[in-house]
Image (cartoon, rainbow over all chains, first blue to last red):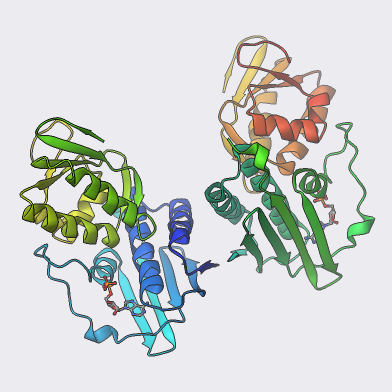
Length: 137
Length: 137
Length: 103
Length: 103
Ligand SMILES: Nc1ncnc2c1ncn2[C@@H]1O[C@H](COP(=O)(O)OP(=O)(O)O)[C@@H](O)[C@H]1O
Ligand SMILES: Nc1ncnc2c1ncn2[C@@H]1O[C@H](COP(=O)(O)OP(=O)(O)O)[C@@H](O)[C@H]1O
């Protein structure tokens, strides 16, 4: 079990570093191309939320990747304003709603999602992607 | 001034992540292709030393990148056995010596190098690369 | 950007995320100014998009519809198509493949 | 790996660093077994090398010399050449460019 930590400035231009690093780690683990693309989206959505909803202009946020035999577990943690995960409504998929897709996309693409959030303290979202055997080439 | 921190497992397979991240940061800063290559080598040499000389088998080591207007400052810090930087001899460049090139290469490629090392506590090497105006295309 | 009488073509390149999304919006808005009935977003070189891009696509689709224009996405990669489908954006924006065959 | 009577050719691909350096050494050692007088390291697709690779190059150059063989590096990229020159390895290992012209 290997741990990687990445602390990024809370600025849009560094979200690509989160994608770059997770793609590299997942590639080396043998994830399929499709899974790697899913992981890039999931980590970006979590970073985007850390930036957009955390009011922490000059701050930073933290990513961790935990490399395991059969899975990649990663978390995105901010010190932002927090929220109540259970009160977030599922988006309408009729194409009329402009926002609110982030958490929905993460839950659709990842095998496990856990959100811990405290009002005024921050949010940590933990995602797990299993390396499916049948996806291996 | 933006700060990025990366904590990596002290294992050879993760040194490429150090290269990947510094190349991405330096590219976005507008460093020339040659400078980016130099930065990749310098960060790798420092990581290789952190792994090779730090006896910290199951440990980790830390990288920081500080993005400034005109320069990229980065450090590689380990909790290893430390050494006395002043007692390291310059390598012989007659092609007969197999090792001892790491610090020499770093000093050749970077604009500033500073080593802080404490026996038994660890080593931190700080490197600066200036974005030279004349290198810009 | 290219055009003929009927359609404007915008080439979307690289990654659309929270950093580049404003530029993405602007390039579509710019092509709207040509007032062609059709606006083709050529996605051949679009390697990545996420919810920030989906939001802009919906926004721009609604805006063009009001003006009697229509956005069409051309040749999106599998990962892009997956997001369009997941968010239902493919129900309101037409997608065409490279050959020109409608999906 | 290819060979004719005179020379063995080893294609070196990707990155040589502390992780891949053992594989780099092994591929050179393997080509030594063919006992050709010349061993060409085709570096066309070698994108990165550092001091770990320089160490192996010196080691292998010394070993082949003892056996009456000779290592030649073919078509290294500018960043690779820079390291060869910085460490003086280019003084003991010949470098040839793609055209075959000796440097
Ligand atoms: N890291 C976070 N910090 C605070 N609030 C968050 C965070 N992540 C999500 N939220 C809340 O959850 C809601 C839904 O998030 P999401 O599904 O990503 O859609 P969107 O970000 O487009 O609103 C957000 O509007 C926000 O109120
Ligand atoms: N991070 C480190 N921890 C402990 N010792 C170090 C570290 N970095 C360098 N050294 C010492 O400095 C010497 C020279 O290092 P270097 O120039 O990189 O060559 P090499 O690693 O090939 O010996 C090493 O042999 C080692 O004794």
